[in-house]
Amino acid sequence: MAGNTPKAVLLDFHGTIAQIEPAPVAVARAAAACEVELDPIRITAIADALNLAGWPSGPGPLRVRPRLAAAWANRDLTEADHEEAFTGLAAQVWEDNPRLGFEGLAEALYARLVSPEGWLNYADTLGMLTTLRERGIPTAVVSNIGFDLRPVAKHLGLDELVDVWLLSYELGVCKPDPAIFQRACMLLDVECEDALMVGDTLADAAAVNAGCRTLLLPVTPAGTVHGLDAVIRLTERN
Image (cartoon, rainbow, N blue to C red; front, side, top):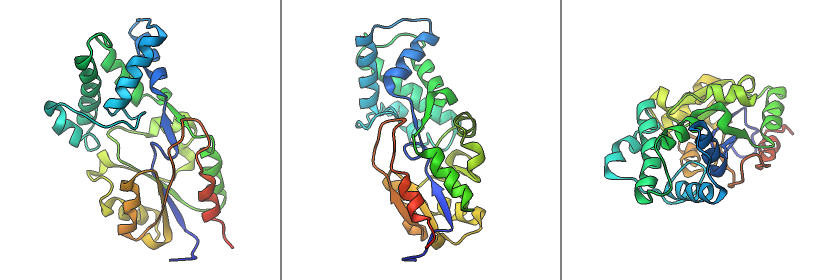
């Protein structure tokens, strides 16, 4: 494998080629959808509490109530569990601090989370995918997710630059299970040792157990340059 140029690239979605909007933006827009105007201090307080509780925009430690444990464990396997897990997570924040939330905010925040308008490309995503397409290198998005990312991708201009979509809730299997990486390689008609998996978590790095080369990217803010030029360098033929 060493020295071989990858013949296909597998890509995580959230945190790798796209990111959800920052929590303060999501809170403000969710509140507006509820026809509630929040002052900036309260917006910041809600956003910080969400991130610390485990909202996808933040790295904070996750704490869920026992009643949410089953939905949280299965959040990337069914749409119903995904919605229950994240609306419940937001509601849990209000339970801890009733002054932060209001009726309907948890549901409005979830609507932002699954809305195409609630996502941003990284600044170097389109350039990287375009270069791969020009080089004839097929791509697959391999994502642990509980809802359909294709409308998000279409809104972001990514849909025509990705060849195959493997979403855990459709397949019934999540990363780090080697089966999801093997399935991606099969659909792209390449051997696992000829594929590069690009992600941002240890679940993505588990592609090595399927025989893939892996590249993990650092955390960067939504909409910024994310280091995806490394993918371009790794797929450049000598």
